[in-house]
Image 1: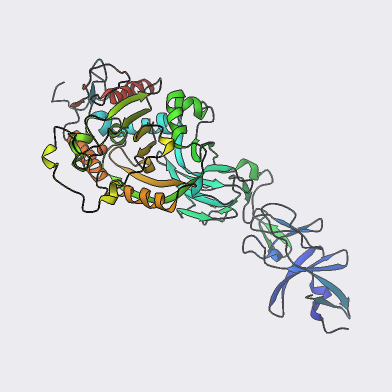
Image 2: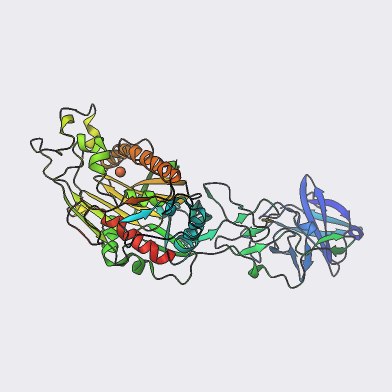
Length: 104
Length: 418
Ligand code: FES
Ligand SMILES: [Fe+2]
């Protein structure tokens, strides 16, 4: 595995059809599990200062608990008002029961 | 009227016309509340500001209409919105800054978030809080953000000036002004972009109508304002006109300085000061501008909220912001035009020294308004006199008349039903 992949938490610790917040190399990251796939984005909303991991995952979008802005968890794209700025999404892979993530 | 029962329960306008104005019109708190409803919140356009104050999308200015706090803001699409500064949640006046730049408005109390049109975008914990994978609390299913926006006002902009109304059925701004006032409005705001030069702000302990009356009173400038007279800005031989809209609510005092030659008598009242000289004559370094089209001073009163001033090269708006029957804030916005030379900007700024709370001229007005209010409070059963030039209401070609004040009160009585 290349150096760019960073080990995070165990796949089993990511709740099914839901989200969890983790800190990876000092970055606040949200990890999502949907139908056995894992996705990762920044965890702090680009609008208010809220954690997306306190929000609601629905139809591949995470809804911020503060003002209900929605991001696509695959691309990080801002999907609805009041969001004006996309969020960063990261590549993930699963190996040996662990979730790995790449920052670039 | 009997002195045993000095304040009638329901104030009655006893005189047959408006050449007498009862003091209760300035001292009665209930009348004041009705004025806010009938004059500021319904059927009238009120001044909110200049477009030049919010040049960029997201720029806002907090101001007031009557006694209601409102926000004037420029949207991403460049249009201007005016919304009421009261949160749709628990009613807080959420916006505290006077000016600023935002992407959206957030109330600090519970962080409800509104877009620049005042639409509610989202509320914290709408779906409750997640505990052990279950959402608890939050808004009911039938909660719709679209039901809970900020109160949005109707907005009219013309020549770079912004007016707004809580009354969405109000006539058009142009009809509200009427053709005569509109022509003077357009003279001053003729499409050139305005530039913001600065503000003066003062609180005057008097009824707000006294400010309207002050600029509908051409009797006083040559008598009260010795500075005007002494240095020749106000002359008895000025050519003058008094004009009104068809309802007599708005007015314009139009005057054109005579030759201004030193040989002519400034006025026979104050000629004893003829020998006085300005230490710095540049305060009156007047340059005639083409857009004046004659008049050297046009003072417009747009009822109820604003005065538009051209006094030689000094141009400004003066916003009347009542707070209770016996006090108002008076906010002066001095401006210029985009094609002004640096010299002209300097000149406008210099001449602005005549105005504002400590102005060479305007300081006098603030004081006489304060002392008038004191007289009214002392004997609220009494009345004032506005009989100069007769008892009628008519336009004139001279300044020796209180006809504009009589006109304003004829309109006021009609709207107030007294
Ligand atoms: S009062 Fe404004 S968010 Fe609650
Ligand atoms: Fe005056």
